[in-house]
Amino acid sequence: MSEWPIRIQITEVGPRDGLQNQSKPISTETKIALINALSKTGLTNIEASAFVHPSWVPQLADADAVFAGIDRENGVTYSALVPNERGLKRALDAGADEIAVLTAASETFSQKNTNNSIDSSIEKIQPIVEQANSNGMSVRGYISCVIACPYEGVTDLQKVRIISQRMLDMGIEVIAYGETLGVAKPDDIKRMYDALDGVVSPESSVLHLHDTQGMAIDCVAEAMKCGVISFDASCGGLGGCPYAPGAAGNMATEDLVFFAQQIGVETGVDLDALISASRIIERELGCKLQSKTYRAFQDE
Ligand code: MG
Image 1: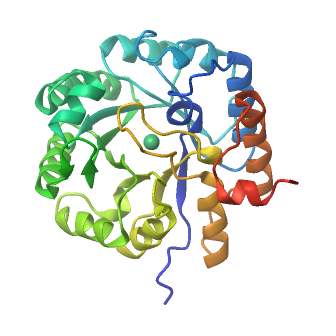
Image 2: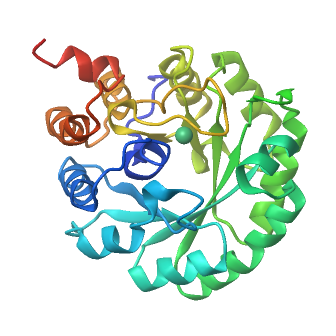
Image 3: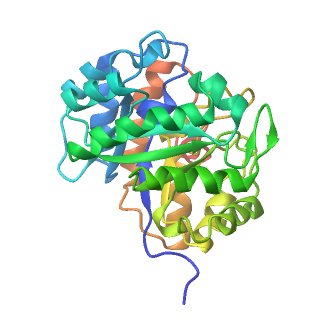
């Protein structure tokens, strides 16, 4: 039997996580064009924006207009990051299909990223989850810095385990693990899933990798061997994190789709269509996207 899964599920996070810290303002029109193009690639989950305070993430201040402007493709889930109850109200009004909430496994990172301790960020999530669930909206819970933190170093995996359990207890169905720094080696991924044994199964989790050291795809391979079948990825490798100095972009969707093709794992995503979608944002950003696969398919 193959060690690889038959199929993986990809959540495209480029329009939110990929764009949030781009300093050049991107027009609402371009964001809508990007999401519409991504919707036609075979991707079934797209994180379209975040309902955060405009002064916190100016680039995503137009989340409501983005949701209002996109052409919704059947079978595609359009999600948004929501930091508080005000954000949830906007997400409900905008008709987001799913929301993501956020905490971290590092106290210092949590303070810098959300202005809250880990405990208080989890307490603030509780009413959001209750209201989302009562409105029939599913919630994905992100934990940042699961392997390492830019301020505190190596993460205690017991903390990741405890926070996962707390999120499950409050009704969050899917836990997403953010390797915020992009420093994980394949062994780290295995150690994390070993530490989660009995709390969260690899099959039910989502893994969010960054490619700072060029190891994201190696970590994907290890994660697949552990049983992980859901990954976040960002078109062209857009992204990084303003609160994680030195972290490069998110794992590129093109790199993940190409790797999956090479090993015979289905993604349902058309690579050519994906590359065309990424070109929309590369043109407006005016700088080269980092994805190795994307670059290899350009005439240059
Ligand atoms: Mg990211």
